[in-house]
Image (cartoon, rainbow, N blue to C red):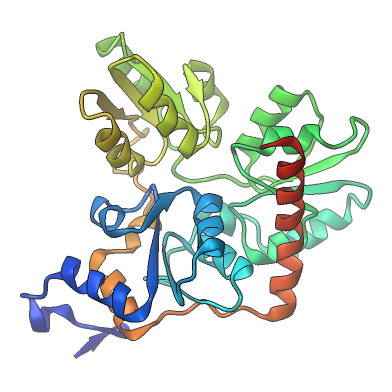
Length: 324
């Protein structure tokens, strides 16, 4: 029996998914890449855990025939852009991204045409269509250096995240034109509730991703990419942290520093909005089924893939030049 194109696992509730996934990895020469925001079970079966670019770079290095990308659609697309000869699978094709979706390629094309003399720097959290319209891709960890590598008089468009862009304007002093996009998770954190939480945990340090809004960033003791936040908690001497990013990263923080306490920053309503609903569409069951049947597969037009790869290559060139 199938539901929505997937085999109904209720037909065999005794299946050991962990064992079956390990079997399929060996039989099919497959590798599982999981973003930090995936559910703990998926992180625990993954061969590599990281942020979006790190995962795609890992994909490019692997000799696996199949890449199973437990993340969202733009991340699996990036893996396909870098690994055209490998089969790239995404457990749930509906796992999109509010930030990537905030910049439809055709609208972005029209926006870019209004600023013909501007260099377009796009955050990697965007669709392949937006990547193909960009000059350079960046990540949250290398964005500042990428911007500073350009001549001071070079006008810049930064897309698609307005909050990350505003943060980078403050850091670099560059007057960039920003696309009006954002991440639904990072915009939902409540300044008032974080303040109350800090009052109850006065020794806790506040950690924030630069996709958060500026009032939250002002409160933060440390601002950085997902990987940078994790590394900070490993090296820092504090024992408590309030973490303003998607709550999936707490699993790795707790595994690396079991003696420390990690508190997810609260959203401004009663829902679990610090969980990305797109990331959480992937489940262990869907991961098993996508490996078993080798679908859904990411298929990309070759012309689009080549165009989208150019700004990624440019980022890697700049990163190599400046040791980023």
